[in-house]
Image (tube, rainbow, N blue to C red):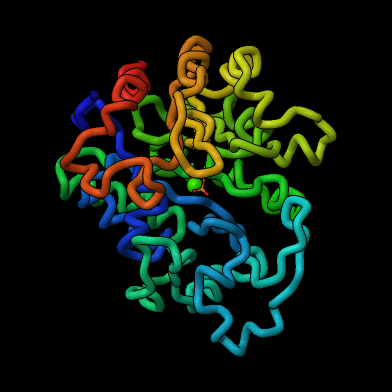
Length: 314
Ligand code: G3P
Ligand code: CA
C-alpha cells in the first residue's frame, strides 16, 4: 500500500472539525497546525454582500442565533433548492449583525465531534480566511492553501446576491487569481464553475454526489444527473471547464447496505483519462474509511493502489 507521504495533499475539510466548531478561524488554524495543506471554507453571503464561511445559508444549527431575541422576527421559511427550510438565513443579516452571533458545532452527535467550543468564535469572513492562510503560511514555513466552495449559487443568484463575482473579486484583490496560488474553487453546481472558468486562473473542481443532480440543472430543466457527469463522456464534458472532480467517496469505493466496502469503481481511471484530477470527499476516520491514526499510519492496504493512483496523477 501507499504510505502517507508527501504525495498526498491533505485538505482540512471545514477546518479541524473534530476539535472545533466547523468553519471557524480556530478550526481552520488547528487544521493547518495538524498538518493540513489546505483549509476548506464553504461560502455563502450576507445581506450586504460579504462572503462568509458557513456550510449552508441557514444558520440555526451552526450559530447561537436562536438565543438572540432581537433576531426572533428573522426566522422564516425559504425554498432552498426545492426544499422548504425554516430558520435564519445569512442573506437576511448584515455582516455587523452576523458578527454578534457565535458559532456552534453543526453535527455534535457525530462520533468525534463535540460542543466544547460552542459559543466562542464568530462567523469568519472569506477575507479573514484568506488572511489566516497567509499568516499561517509564514508561521509554519509551508504554504497553506485555500479550497473555497460556492454553496447554493443558484439560490443566491435568485436573490441578487450572486456568489461567483464576489469570489473573483476576492481572489483578484488578494493576488490569488493566478496559477500556482494554492487555491482551488469547487462547487456542486455546474453553471457557476463554467462562468468562473473564463475568469479565474486557478483550478476548478466539479463536486458530485452518489445521487441527485446539480441544482442549476434541475432549475434549468437540464435532465442530466451527477451519475451522467461521471460517465466517461460526462467526464470529458466536465474537463471542458474544470480541472478536477470531487466525487463523493461512495462513487469511488462503493459500500453495500451493511456498510461493507467493495471494489473501487472505474471512476478514478475514467476521470484521469479525461484529464481530471480526483479529490474524493470525505475520507476520514469518523467515516470509517481510514484508521483513526491515519496521520501517522498508512492507507488501508486493500485500497493502497487506488490512493496511490489518485495521488500520483499530475
Ligand atoms: O470537498 C467536498 C465537500 O466539501 C462537499 O461537501 O458538505 O462538506 O460541503 P460539504
Ligand atoms: Ca465543502
